[in-house]
Image (cartoon, rainbow, N blue to C red; front, top):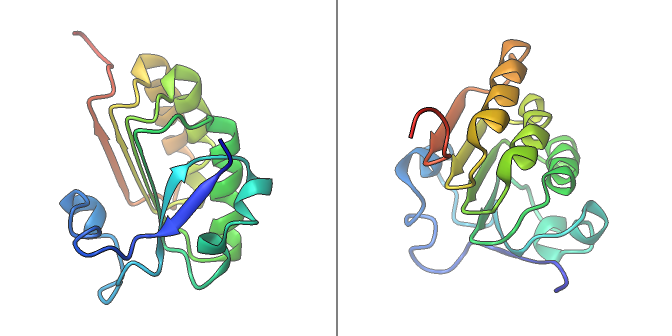
Length: 151
């Protein structure tokens, strides 16, 4: 499937985000600065997406779609430099341990990262924890149901 993104402008869509994610958005955000990746892809594909070309991007959301960690990190790097991307919310994106390890490289470009149900386990979390030691940018890290520790 080709990559597809859109602005999160449908009624109630932003308000349906978990409160900690919603609270990171600018006060008057109306969805124009938040992009929902309905079909994730590569950086090359992302640069052709109208939702990512117009306006300032504050937040990228991906839910229930497989995300390739390496590709996603390149997208985060690009839009954190080109725009104002600071918040990422990934929910049930099948990252696994290697995806969590790739995401650790994105921490320096983000101020807020929320992970939920991506199965990054101990291996992905350990890499993220190590990256946090050298990070001065990330202010909020939310980790929910990631399959780490004693279960």
